[in-house]
Image (cartoon, rainbow, N blue to C red; front, side, top):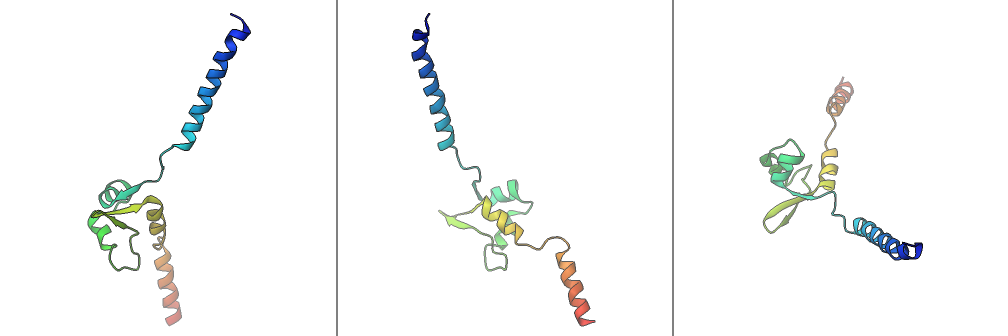
Length: 104
């Protein structure tokens, strides 16, 4: 077998690899999905579905959901932002301490 005989095979292999790379980089599914309330409660945050529903209505920390066909859905990125909007542990104590000192 000569080098000229191998050239078409090599070109075919190069094109197949290039196509596989193009395909893998353009059709990858989103890595951050939309979740229903039950999925959020069981797989994402340690809160019950009942507790999550309390945040759907008027609230200072309204749950970022959209109703689609009777199902409440939220995107994981929005849930992350929502969770970060709550005070961190210790923040409440600091606020209480400041208020006590102001009134002292």
